[in-house]
Length: 374
Image 1: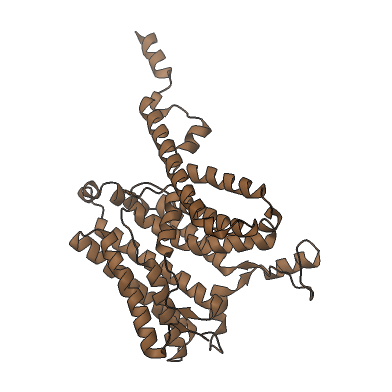
Image 2: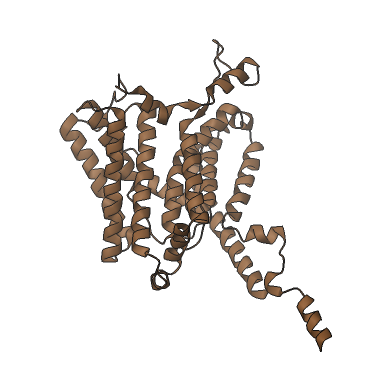
């Protein structure tokens, strides 16, 4: 009998049996989008124009596009994982830009004060979206759809009433604090890129300055926002609350998760992410436009879905949403550089969405099947 007990103790426990790296990879929410990203890189590499697309200048172009969407996608991914939607972020982009533009051009405020006020407005909008959703138990789809129209209408109505038009130009003409603009529209590692140009490693203009002066601040902001969101989701108790709130809010409340507070906080986060993107766009263009941000809410949801975030909540990662944004930027610029008719962009994007969802569903079902069989 002791010998039998010893053998049973020495036998490996099925619950802690090791799994292969491929199985572990397939269990990751971003497995499908990672495969799709590699496939997209390969496909465009085989088409004419790939040399320009994958040059330093081409890469910075599609990375900038991906960064602007990725800032939104990181926040939207967190909210969807928590089981909610925010359709107002596109209109929030336009409204925040108008707030900045009017305060600077009409009231003479410094940029930092105007930007700070825009973020305060975003905090209020996000709080109201979240509060109405959790208090009335209305679908967030309906609540934020109403906010979408309210914010867009306010943007157009206020701007026309004050300026007589729908755009606010000359925001950056002689601002009292130009360093603020550089924080959102400057470049980093400019000295390093200048040195690479002098060494002949990257293309330069006639005066010797590189065509790519450095890494745009939009990419830096994207990395910062994505890293912060990923850390919160995977390394903090609040991240566990997000998964719990989206997985089963009733059970989450019963075990002490402050579901209402989590969701309201995330609505504020999405509104602030939209304001950050609005600030970047205003600093890049030097103007504000009431229609800016149109359909960005759907593009952000698309990036999150492509990245493996379930629309039903409780599943997904911020990294997957970042990969989804990268695919979006790569496809958009890849079609341009390879000479494909850009009218087909949305068709291609729709196919990518469908394929990504199918792959994610297959990967998740296979992972669960192997887990249940083990």
